[in-house]
Length: 237
Figure 1 (cartoon, rainbow, N blue to C red):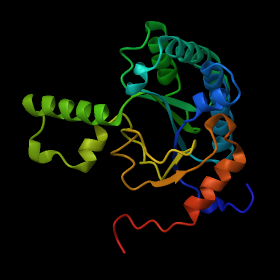
Figure 2 (figure 1 turned 90 degrees about the vertical axis):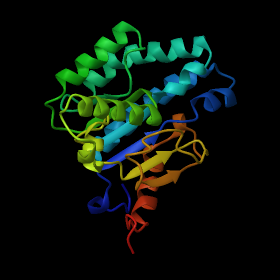
Figure 3 (figure 1 turned 90 degrees about the horizontal axis):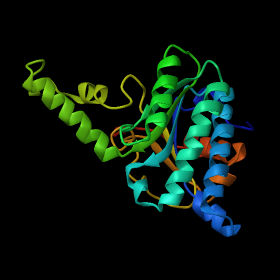
Figure 4 (figure 1 turned 180 degrees about the vertical axis):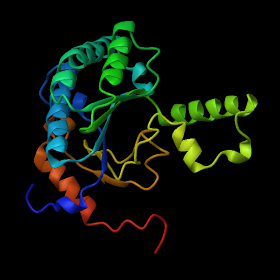
C-alpha cells in the first residue's frame, strides 16, 4: 500500500463506477465490453478493500436514470448482474456481507430474488460489507424514507416532532451503517450524480481522470492518500 497510513483509512468508501462506455469506445469495442471489464475491476477493488480491512464498500452499479440507455446495453448489464450475483459475489469472500441499495422491484424476477437471497444468506457475516447500489437514486431514496416515516406518523407510531437526523437515517437503505468517509469518482467527471446525497453530506470527494475499467489498486491508494491529506472538520473549525 506504499506510504498510505493504515490507521487513517476510511471506514466506508463509496465509488461511482464511471467510464465503462468511454473505455470501450476508445478501443472501438461495444459498450457492453466496457461494462464487463468494469465488473472485473470492481471484483479486484473489492478484494483490495477486504485486504486493507476497510469495513464498508459501496458501489454505484445501476442508477434509476440508467433505464434511459439503449435496451441492448441495459440487457447486457442485467446479464452481467446475473453472472456476478450467482457466481463472483457468492465466492469471492465467504465472510462478506452483501447488501443491495435501491428499488429492486422493477428488476427481472430472477435478479431480484437472487439479490435478496444473497443479502439474506450473508446477513450474519462479519467480514467486509459490500453495498451494491442497484436501481438506486438518492432523491428516490429520500422520498421513500419520508413516505415511510409519514405512514408511521399516520399510524400513530410516532409524532412528526420525533423525526430527527438519526431516525431519518434509519429509514434509508443504509440503516445501521456508517456514512461514507470517502466518495471516489473516476472518469474525469466532477459530480456525484444523485449518489448518496444524504449519507455523503460530509464525505471527502476525490475525482480522478482514469476510466473505471482501468482503475487499479495504485489508483485506489492515490485516492486514499488524497483523503488522508485532508482535514475533516464536519462544519467546525
